[in-house]
Image (tube, rainbow, N blue to C red; front, side, top):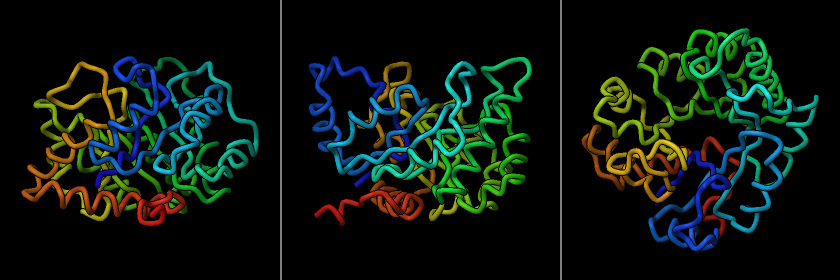
Length: 264
C-alpha cells in the first residue's frame, strides 16, 4: 500500500480516462495507491477541488495559497483556520518561498508564508512547505514563526543534506518526488539515503514532475511506485518496506487523515 503525500488531482488531464474522475481513481486504486493528499494552491479553486474529491474517503485535502503567484487572493484573517475545519482538511499549504520563479521585492511572499504558519499554529494543522532558491529565508521564517510547534513536511524536497537536517531538527518530514529518479539528482539521492526512515514521505506532485521513465510527460498518482522503487534501491531495501514506513509516516504526521484501516 502506497500513499501519495502530495498531488493536485483537480489539475490532472482526465482525457485518458474519458474525462471521468472516477475512472482515474479506479486506476489509482489498481496501482496500489491507498490514500492521496490533494493539495490546495489557491483559494479561488479551493471549493471546486473540494467538491471533486469529497466523495472519496481515500483522499484528504489541504488549504493554502502557493508562493509563486503574486496575483492570487490573500486569505483574510482567520480564513485559513475556518476553511481548515472541513473534515477532509489535514494541513495548511502548500506555502513557503520560491525565489526561482519570482523577481523584485518579495516581501509579499514572506508575508504570505508567515500568515500560513500563524494559521497552522492557530488551528493546529501541520504545514506543507514549498521552498526553491530561498533556503536561508525559508528556514529563518520557520524558526521565527515557531513552525516547529505544528511541524509538517518539506514537500518535493530538492535541497542538500544540510537543509534537510535543519528541517528535521525542527520536527519536519522530508518528502521526495519523481525528481529523485532523475540521473542528474545525485545530491538528492544522497539525501534519500540519509533521511531517517520515520521522517520520509513520498509524493508525485502530479500532474508535475513525472519520474523516469515518464519524465517530460504529465504525471499521475499511479507513477508513485517509481519513486518508491528508486528509494528502495538507494537504501538497499524492498519496495514493500518503503511503502510500509512511508505510509505509517503519513498517517502519523497527518493524523486527521482517514486511514484505510479505519475505513474497513
